[in-house]
Each structure stands twice: as C-alpha cells, then as structure tokens.
Amino acid sequence: MSKNVLVLADVRDGELRNVTLECLAAGTTAAEGGTITVAVFGSNGKDLVEKLAHFGADQVLLVTNSELDQYSTDAFFQAFKAVIDKVNPDVILTGHTAVGRDVSPRIAARLDIGMVSDCTAVALTEGRLTFTRPIYAGKAFVKKAFKEGAVLATLRPNNIPALEKDTGLSATVEELTVELPADSIRTLVKELVRKASEGVDLSEARIIVSGGRGVKSSEGFKPLQELADVLGAAVGASRGACDADYCDYALQIGQTGKVVTPDLYIACGISGAIQHLAGMSNSKVIVAINKDPEASIFSVADYGIVGDLFEVVPMLTEEFKKLLAES
Amino acid sequence: MNILVCLKQTFDTEERIAIEDGQISEEGVEFVVNPYDEYAVEEAIRLRDEHGGEVTVITIGPERAEQAIRTAMAMGADKGIIVDDEDLEAPDENSIAKILASVINDLEYDIILGGYMAVDDGSAQVGPRLAELLDIPHIATITKLTVDGDTVEVEKDVEGDIEYIQSKLPLLVTAQQGLNEPRYPSLPGIMKAKKKPLERMDIEDLDIDEDELEGRTETLETYLPPAKEAGKILEGDLDVQAKELVQLLRSEAKVI
Ligand SMILES: Cc1cc2nc3c(=O)[nH]c(=O)nc-3n(C[C@H](O)[C@H](O)[C@H](O)COP(=O)(O)OP(=O)(O)OC[C@H]3O[C@@H](n4cnc5c(N)ncnc54)[C@H](O)[C@@H]3O)c2cc1C
Image 1 (cartoon, rainbow over the protein chains, first blue to last red):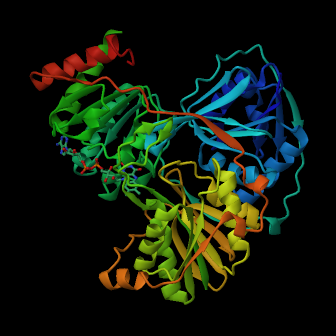
Image 2: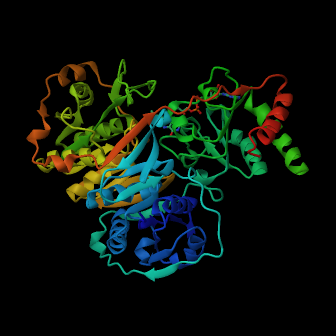
Image 3: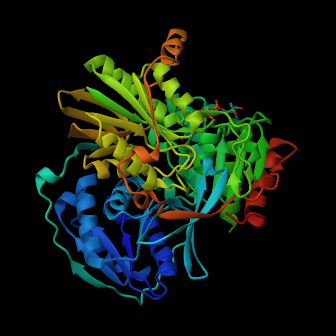
C-alpha cells in the first residue's frame, strides 16, 4: 500500500546535509510508490529544490520564515507540526543530527506516536517497515517496527546510501506560511560559536584520519593532517586528545561526539575505549596504528600496524602519494 | 529551588553483551547510574547548594534500581522515587516519558535534569518527550548551566559547535559529557543515603490509562553484530608494512 512520506531537510550553512538525501532513499523504500515530500525551513530553501528533486523528492514544502535560519527547538517544532498537519504523512524521517534528534521526540510526544532513533537500516519486510539500530554502544542491534499510528524515525548519517542522482526528475514546490510569535520561542539562541572546521563534515566523510592521546600534542596532529590532505579525508579525534587540548572538541568521535561511518577509518594512537568505538565501529574498514599490541582498537581493526605513529603515518602518506600519482 | 532528576540504572559500560531467549541477558551484570545521568545528578546537587532547595531523583525500574537512587543520594540528592516497572509490558520511550510526566505532574519543580541519553538504548528521546508532555521548554546536550532568579543561561553542544542559549524556568535540560565532574560518594554520604526518604510507586498508583503506556513500537529481533573476523596485523619492517597496507586498502579492501 503506498504511503505518504515526509522528510525534514537538514540544512547547514545553506547546504543540504547528505543525510537528507539518505532520508530520501529510505523514504523511497517506505513510500511504495506514494508521494515523498521534503520540508525545508529557512529563507534560502528554494535554492535546494532542484537537488532534492534529483534525489527523489516529489514535492518540496518551503517554510521561509527567517526565524528558521537558525535552529531553535520551539520554532522548528511549530513549523514541523504545521507541515505535518498539512501533509498528514504516514512516515516521517529526519537525520539523527543535532536538529532531528532534538525536535523529533517532541513531535512524537505531541502526536502520541512511536519513534525509532539512530537507525542504520530501513527495510520493507513482508509489507512491514522495519528499522535497524545499534544498542549498547553498538555491542548489539535491534530490529524495530511500529504497532500503529504514524511512523517516525531518525537516521544515522552515512549508513543508508542515497539514490543515484537523476537530473531528469523535478518536484512541485509550495510555500507554507507559519506564524511564529516571538513569545512562543522559549529558548533563545544568543550566539552560535562554530568550532567545527570548514571542509569535510566528519559525519559525512568517506575517509577519516583520527588521532588520540598518542598524538601527544597539537603539533602531533600535523602528520595526520598531511595524510588526510593526500586522501581528501577529514581529521577526527578521541576524547583523550580533546581533553588534553591537542585539538578542539568539534573533532571528537564517539558516544559524546560525532558518530561516523566512513568507508575507511584510520585510528592513530587511540586505545579503543567503548565510548570511542560507539562512534566509529560501524566504519566499513578500520585501520589501527598503535604501539601497544594489546590495545583494544585492534579488536575492531581490519588492518593493524603495531608501531610508533610518528614513523608510520608519514610513511603511509608517502605510499598513498605514490599510489594516487600512478592512478 | 525544587530540582528533579530523572535517572536510569544501566549496564556498566564495560559489560559484555550476551543474548538469551532473544533478549539481552542480565545475568552476572554490574549495574551503574547511567553516566550521562550522573552528570545531571552532580549538576542538581551544585544547583541546590548554590540556591537552596531540594533534589529529588526519579527512576523507573525493577527492585535493583533502588541502588542507583541510593548512589545519587550518597552523592547528595535528598529524596527518591522509584516507579516499579515489573507490570509494564515491553515499554518504549512513549511509556517511560508518560510515566515520568504522570509522576512529575504531582510534584513542584523549577528545573528538571536528565542525561542526554542512556548508554543502553541510546535513543535520546525521553528528555524532550517529557518536556513536551509537561509543556515546558527543553535544552539538550548542555555543557554549562547558570541559574539566576528565573533566568537560565546554558551552553549547548551542537555536534561540536557551541550555542549560548537563554531561557526561563521551568525548564528541562539534558546533560552532555563536559557539564561537570561527578563527585564520588563519600563514606558519610553513603551512610546518610540509607536513611533518606524513598517513595515506591506502582503503575496502578498513577493516574493514567494502561493504553496510554503501551509501547508504540515493538522490537522484532535483538541480535549481536556478526563476529568480526580477526583483523590482519601486519609484520616486518615498518616501511614494508606501510607499503603492504596501502596495497591492501586498494586491492583487498577497495576503499582507495
Ligand atoms: C560518559 C563518557 C563518555 C565518553 N565519550 C567519549 C567519546 O565520545 N569519544 C571518545 O573517544 N572517548 C569518550 N570517552 C572517553 C574514553 O573512555 C577514553 O578515555 C578515551 O577514548 C581515550 O582516548 P585515547 O584512546 O586517545 O587515549 P588513551 O586511552 O590514553 O590511549 C592512547 C593510545 O595511544 C597509544 N600511543 C601512545 N603513543 C603512541 C605512539 N607514539 N604511536 C602509536 N600509538 C601510541 C597508546 O598505546 C594508547 O593505546 C567517554 C568517557 C565517558 C565516561
């Protein structure tokens, strides 16, 4: 039976985050031929319509209030609720990101429906939509389904592949006006301080070079950055490295930091604490470089080198340079 | 100031996970206060010490959950409430948020704290759901909290960026790592905790329909991830290993 699907777009600095395209792919599975609507909040939404259409959106709903240019729970909640009232969706999908994770549970409570968070797979099994998600920091998984009512799920970035881009597709566009009285916004964001560097968003990166306390200083991140530059990779870090002030917390990967699922994760001088593994153990291929052969990071690694990262990392950089120059 | 803390008792982080009869086995498991809830307890005690008032910790759980409440009391919390969950069939986040809302609706409060997620289910839903049910604002993943009169200033972790947010009481906040360093319970604290008032409730004591509490979702399957094949630890001189690794990443793993 075809379903009405609603996706809330995740926009950062005017750009769509990939997780929105991944929601569109999951939405296509869920819709079974039904309509897929994407809600875009903020004044620049119309610039994103074409891309959304190319990746599977049938309809784009723009809510252009400037109060929505920056996230606040109450403003997004009201706009999201207004969109839901209009679209009357059977299935609602968002990214498991700062935005989706914050506003969706409130929507679930208001609509009195279930919600499944942080899904890594969505499937249609004998006519029933099922959602797979990690529990216990990734030590186990559950498959969940909804009993009745609308379906609401947040998807972990970088797990469900987006559809192939099809430039032949287009979407209808509609604007929705939402009243957002100032006194309805009870938490006021006074300032946002960006810590995350420009460039590759860690949660979307295809390759991550990550450093831990073993990197020993902020200088110590240099060889990692050089390797990352050669690979077009992002640089990440363990809590240990952040706490020691070798790098900013914005680089942190793990339960407290970003959850990443790159194709390749290169862990340098990271011991592999469970809270770190929670953020990266789903990576497709894991390389560990650590001078301690007993380090737990080796238990999740596909390839390991036991040795001093300050020797190994520059060698890898040289080898990758050669390889990439050949091809 | 009336301060409420919602907390959950969870597996110790280091526990291995085993599955028995299709469910996570609790056999031989050590339980702790969910680490993110511990930050909430610590912050609550600091607020009380600064502004006066009382800290009440609330949990939903079985018999053993009393231990988590006593730990919070040993840290300094004043009172506890346990709602026995034994009659609850397959609860989900809907059930838990509604039970908490029902308990809290009968209490006086200025601020409610909790962890941003529990390290077992990790769904990060209960805090915001509860705030919505109580019709109060929430701020999630906070790393700093200051209360002055009824004005609240918060630093919120947003995927590594920081938002400076202002709000008013009553408010619900969820704690992120970095908010504080939770204290260890002192010996006198542990002794005192044994005598602090603890109220036990059953689901029937709550003014709420059973239908309301039913899980809106169900778990079809719980399983362990496929055992990872032992990784390849390379050998030989480091420069030879580096060469080999790069080749393997291209030809075997095909990620370069
Ligand atoms: C509630 C909570 C949440 C947490 N959340 C997170 C999180 O999100 N992310 C996270 O990462 N951690 C998190 N932690 C912290 C976690 O438990 C670990 O303390 C942290 O991950 C350790 O960082 P590390 O591996 O860099 O440091 P260490 O454990 O100190 O490991 C350093 C490693 O570097 C190796 N090394 C040293 N020198 C060299 C060298 N020259 N060459 C090669 N190897 C070398 C050592 O052998 C060692 O294995 C959390 C903890 C708690 C309690």
